[in-house]
Amino acid sequence: MLRIGVIGAGDVARKLYLPGIHNPDAGVVLQAVCDLVRERAEAVAKEFNGQSVYTDAATMLEREELDLVFVLTPLLTHPPIVRQVLQFGKHCYSEKPLTLSRREADELMELADQNKVLLLCAPIYPLLPTVQFIRQIIVNGALGKVAFARAHSSHGGPERGTFHTDPGGYFLSEKSGPYVPLYDMGVYALTLLTYVLGSVKRVFAMAGIAIPERRIEKVTEPGFAPYTIKLTTRDNGFVLLDFGDGCFAAVDASFCMRYNRVPSYEFYGSHGSLTADLWRDEIWLVSEVEGFHHPEGWYRLELPDEVKERERKLWGDSRPTMGLRVVEHFRQCLAKGGLSPIHVSRARHVVEVMEKALLALETGKVQEVESRLDG
Ligand SMILES: NC(=O)c1ccc[n+]([C@@H]2O[C@H](COP(=O)([O-])OP(=O)(O)OC[C@H]3O[C@@H](n4cnc5c(N)ncnc54)[C@H](O)[C@@H]3O)[C@@H](O)[C@H]2O)c1
Image (cartoon, rainbow, N blue to C red; front, top):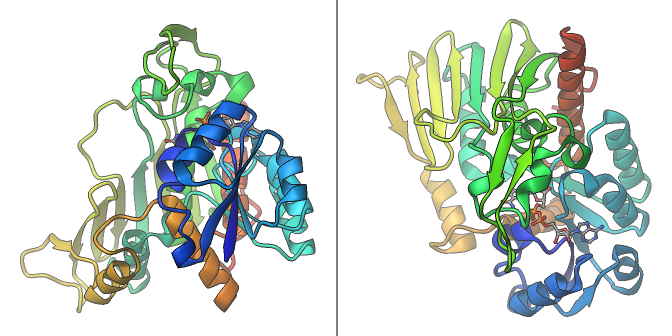
């Protein structure tokens, strides 16, 4: 039986990780739920069949036999909690961003290594069949030499959504860092682009405050009263990436993009282009390369039948939650070994790119990125 522990019983836990995770018939038990707010931990345990409840992570880690611990706490709280999980010798999955600094990411990577445990990190894009397919098409040469990519990794801001228990903190530098849309949203694009195009060699960024006051209108907690907040973090900006060999990418990471009709990812090469809308699982390709060429030019790509069949076998007709995908992937890692595409080394590289983007903001100068991805 795979015993799961969860630290942080907030919005993402309830919506994207815990539904369906406790399934003893499939060999998975939600063993323990921990949140600083006891009522939240209790409510989540009740809703998702959690077997025990804690308000202190160390106590949970000491008392419970756990095979995998999910860290689902707010943006800047991950490093000390992940460190604790690893120190207790447990396999760990961390929500993004793992850390804000490469130094801390290195330290966590080493600790996982020393304790011979896996440290897997969000975003899980490299586990998604659509993203794997995009990579396969590009690696197989459908675009020729890739020269440019563009990614929209933005939204209109968390203040009007029903995600996050209280999104106010997302606008405060002291709570969530100096350019929150980068760690909150840009991290998705950086993960996908590095998965498809490899290591980033150099980075530049521009960012500022575009909408300095926000009205927090909706949160998930009962008894909430709307309030206005003055921003102390940058809410708008973009990052330029150099992958070497003349290949560049532009990524927007903003809380100022309320409406948008363009595909989230675009790749341009010497012999073709590909666009992808991940929300709709829609991939379009135009290619001059034999085997990919279509007489009408642009055409919509479908996932290969064997991939659809594998997905159907695993999940039936429903879309799996992130939690279910991580558990399945974790089992595969234990059974087969090999380097996971969501291994901490990718998060570490992405963290360094974000840290150097911040340095570029401060200095106005392009920054070299030192870490490299394997493979
Ligand atoms: N909400 C989303 O839609 C969403 C989507 C993708 C990723 N994420 C990521 O998920 C993480 C959590 O986001 P969220 O929206 O669920 O936040 P949230 O504020 O709704 O929930 C976080 C929970 O963690 C608890 N917590 C904080 N410190 C703790 C500690 N030391 N020990 C135990 N519990 C602690 C808080 O009490 C809270 O209940 C973030 O890293 C975010 O980037 C969120």
